[in-house]
Length: 322
Image (cartoon, rainbow, N blue to C red):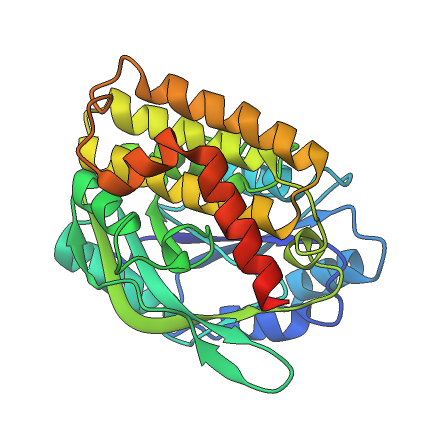
């Protein structure tokens, strides 16, 4: 049986310090039938030159260059130029285990799954720490969403880069350009296109944390409620409702309100209160007239009935801790 081609898509932007380590772990995978697509997204350092240099060293590397358009556009260019039966995304400041692709591909073939998710490690200047474990197993769509909003969830389920995807998923799907939280935004569409999902216990991906110029590091500096982020979460809740996933839909709304009130408590500015009420009113519109309007969830009922009280209690708790 011929080994299927796996397309490895790596967006590159101002990572000259990290790119060599990343690519060394990719070209030395114990699975060799790879198409390694490097998309230079208008780097202003030497990353673009490094992309071309690496392409000369390994004929599996496909160098692509575009004007700076952001992570989503870079991933989309990689998808547009991919030919593999399977797709893997790797961020160019991260690196992977030698068996990263082979282990996930073996799982996909054994379980007949369209999507495989591994665990990951967080890497800093001082240590490597495993991420919270997402419960291993084989899941249907409904089971995945129950896991996603349950106690055995984890951030490994959301991100794009710890996964092996059947290329069929992206036949008619691309990342939305010009937004943050693109992984959150596309997740429902990805899951909707699969028959089964496998989650494995091995931590095969190494994620670099706290790079000062990274998107995630800059997000942590934001002190206002991320309204567009909550729009994405609400869209997902509405899609869960539409597809009849009642329990995950209830859990998604409850999780959203807990997070929203928590963000308001950290900075209860006038602007944040205004954003809070806009998001809260949309939450109610998702619930009204839906199959979960008569939800049997005491915690969610309290959040919906007494939103102002919940917010002030959380604000008080924050100030007591200061």
